[in-house]
Amino acid sequence: MTESLLEGWVAFARPFGLNYAFVLDAGERVAFVRGLWVTLQLCAASIPVSLVFGVLIAAGLTSGRAWLTRPLTALVELTRNTPTLVQLYCAFLVLNMLISQKLEGGNPITPFMWVVLVVALHKAVFHAEALRAGIEAVPGVTLEAARSLAFSRGEILWRVQLPLALRFALPALVNNLVDLVKMTAIASAIAVGDVTYESIMIWSQRDNVLELLLLILLYFGLLTWVVSVAGRWLENRLRMPGYGQ
Amino acid sequence: MDNDLTLAPLGRSGWTAGAAALLRAVARDPWFITLLILAVPALYWTASGTTPVAVERLWYWWPALMRGLGMNVQISLLAMTLGTMLGLVVGAISLSPLAPLRALTRAYVLAFRNAPILVLVYFTTYVFPFEVPVAGWVLPFPDWIKVVIGLALPASANVAEIFRGAVQSIPAAQWEAAHSLGFARTQIFRMVILPQCLRRMLAPWMNLYASITMSTALASLVGVHDLVDTATVASNTVARTDFTILIYFTLLALFFAYCYPISRLTRYLERRHARH
Image (cartoon, rainbow over all chains, first blue to last red; front, side):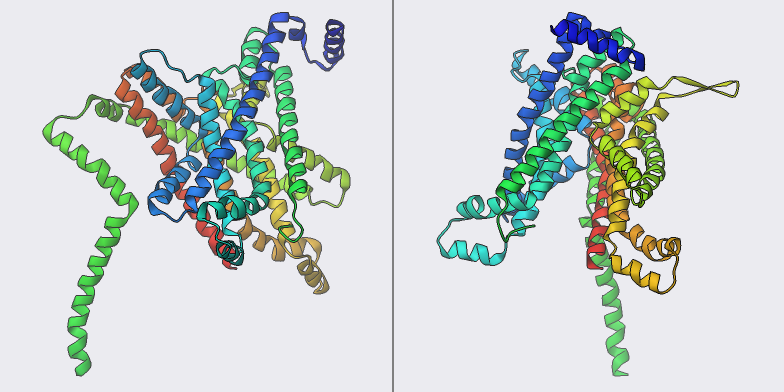
């Protein structure tokens, strides 16, 4: 059934000059599907991690304590103004090497985890900027009201500022997450078997670069579309009358 | 007379105070501090002849690294030029009154903004031929130019959005006012709308330039001899742990030194624009 469907598709694409014969090869098809799955896993792992880090960095930036805000500001500037690929190299080729040397080979951190960590931290910085703007946009009277109700600093942040900041920052956060999905493609640089890497492996055997790239672009288009639809749904879901748009 | 007496000492003390203030300002300048942090150990090492091997190797590789950085800058400048020209055309079409044309540019912008830049770079590198026959001649089509095109495509989609946003941010009343003064559509655009747009576009445009510059690091993945590639080669050639650490963090510092001033300038422009 699947076999005949795939054959039909290959026959359908051929007149357009596209050679999708690799899907008929079981090994390459499995590798490609595994690549799709790994990219999905990368996104699914880094999105929550980036949001958690983003909230933490935003909380630190708005805490008003110099020993916390200064290093965080430096981290934000460094992350924003250097290429993600170089950050990934610094993490994977330097930190990972040092950890491996320290532990003499028994390094528990896989390349997959490094990609998740670097990509998530990179985007967390952008989340933090958006959330900070949201936190600072919370009206002063609201905070006064919360303080007069004996909320502590942490409670104000968690129950008053963040819920409002989230609504304020949601469009920016969704934008960042769309960027994050696209950024996972750099996993191929350190041989994590994501869809880009598996495609490189396939097209170095066959001469079908264009065909595979179209598939990859379609796949990323689908993923970013899902993220933005989810974002829009959340925006509608969380909309509060009288606040924001 | 009274004035003279008070002015003379004030003038001198004012001068010394000014010099002191200048010195304090210089001493607090982050670039000066960075220079000092770099220069003091360098001087000490040269004077005492105890330069660590890793630093010596870094010094040896420095010209190659600078050549690599030059390649990154070259790619980024060309990609941005190409992207801006293409993006302005696409942006102008996206404002056209014809719906099918608008839909076409919408699709273009969506496609190139939602594609990972790395995939676009692979796309242009592997799909384009390595040489092109032009009127009997065979011209080489080097990889770095393909990377320029790969980066110019997403840049153009972003420039188109920036341009459209800037034009649409000008209140419609200005069009109507200029119309009523007898300006033609092209005149209004050239003399009223565009000067205001250019100012509004500058900050996001520079943001885009910084982001494209950072994306040039991806060129190393398709075999262009850029800064990242040079650093990898150096680290593999020297094969010392301390040198590997040093060179990758130098890489980070070099990109930071190039992009951070741009981002500071962008923020300054944004603040200035916000006041207007």
